[in-house]
Amino acid sequence: MIDILRNSSSFVLDLLFPPVCVFCGEISRRSVCAECADGYMRAYFRECGECGRRAVYCKCDLPKGVSDKISLFFYGGPLVPPLRYRAKRSRSVRREDFIGGLLYENMLANPAFTEAAVITYVPRDPGKVRKFGVDQARDLARGLSRHSAKPAVKLLKCVRGAGEQKTLDKQARAENIAGKYAFCDNFDINGKTIILADDVLTTGTTVSECAEILRHAGAAKILAVSVAQTKLER
Image (cartoon, one colour):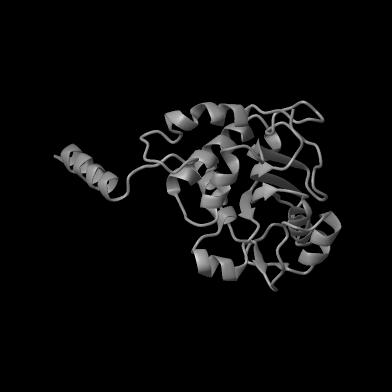
């Protein structure tokens, strides 16, 4: 009887909220639909134009104040930008679990990440959270937390607004976000290793700013994780 009820509930949920591909958003029983599978594999195994490594192993342009990083993809191509677009406009537990699971699998081979005490994230502007009802970096941290059993804690907050970053160079980005974030002072991070999540690493200035705040609050080491990083590809 319990199995019958569980299966019936699952059927109803699938009718009301059909499962969709994390990349294209089309209805799919699998996290990555058949149409996106080849593109997903190409994106996942794409190599850096400088070091020749896949994104998960590429350490080029490590942000200041960050000891190590893991990014799943290089930004670009037909799949990754739409994935980011949807993540910024709607929450999907399926997408969180898929991305969180991929990050966790790649963390297992790196002792620094497996020994980290807590996961936090770069907070989104409160105005955009109110507008879209979602914070994509927070969702990334939640997905990783469920797989790793490490707590996801809000350690940073926005204390002022800032203009759009996407049209700015590295120096202008640093000036634009200086003083934007502050430590929440709600969790003892003294001497701890912190995993800092953001959706995309572009110039690394935002992650560097947040890493500096966390280190000033007592963190021993900052490790960055992201869905993608911008980098020249082979």
